[in-house]
Image 1 (cartoon, rainbow, N blue to C red):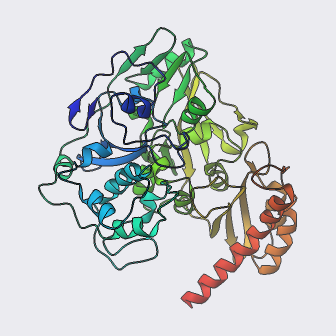
Image 2 (image 1 turned 90 degrees about the vertical axis):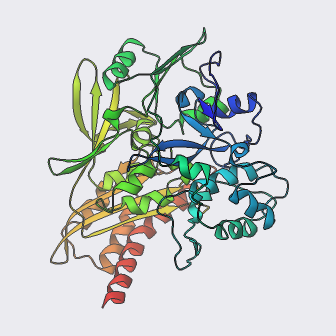
Image 3 (image 1 turned 45 degrees about the vertical axis):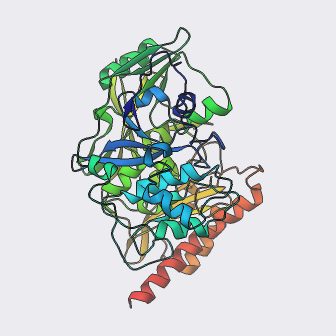
Length: 474
């Protein structure tokens, strides 16, 4: 692996080591462990990833979650590699000049996340908005970085004071060359094994032959288990760089999304071809997480509070499963979940792709109730897609998260809506039914009563939003 321009071998590193622990072990202690679950950003570093034009994009990731062997053959830049005490990087200069650091614990992570946005190819000066500076800096780029003492205003001011990269900037110059390709990796430390197979077929054979193997894409879920629950697997199979899982194409009237594409890549490539997903993406964790997380990983965990599942249920998505011996099979997402963190996917199967029917519903919306506006786990998530025929609801699909052991379709509410005009009265009447959907529980995030009440607000809010949009365009 190349770190700050220097090749450093991974030989002798244990199979389950995280990139953060390894970096700190070789003396690069700028990156810190704050939460060990990807919520604070103190561990952020830059990784070279392939740009659409053939060059390199500098992508910020949570080093505490990424297995270090997943970066075998890749290029990493830490805060130490951005600049030096004698020649600070522009991001470091602005943070220092603006008083953007006090205790300094979070500062290296902020610097790396800000640097990724500093080098974003399409960043350009623009009219300032609440979430973008006059220099085009998107504040969501540091949405996954927490500071407990400085406060965010000087950090924001430092971000908005940044100019554009100069022609002789080393990392800008590096961006013109391709990112390193994925390297096939097979490491055995005596107790565990980390494998990056070259092909999907090889990965499927491994899963068939190793019943206890764990397939890992972005590691944003598995990494938390490794750090906080001491999870270990005899074999970890890295599938994030498999070309067969990174496709995006139209197939038989559906958009087929490869299960290994990151959410950030989807955000950049979808170009609003699929409704609801543009609403989902900014609310799905943080940019640092979206830079690694995948739809396949989100559905693979079968979490009842994952934000992607309700949206995909509302869109009528189907899941393409594949195994070495049985080949492919396609499952309606509504039939995919079978219990708490359980699904019809067998151990020897991978999610190869998610298929979403093309064609936008007439009315749609995504409603997520959380304690924070961004970067928070939902207490309740509701996704709605309605088809209208002369103002009458001809089809309704409502996906729910956080109100049962699995993500579910709100079938009773869908039935109550179909055949009725889409009016405020219909929304209010159906909301009574929606409040009774699922089996919400009391837990540390919300009470069952609160969850039910939040369900009841979704349809009236959706109608009111559409009414306001109609008035604005009239």
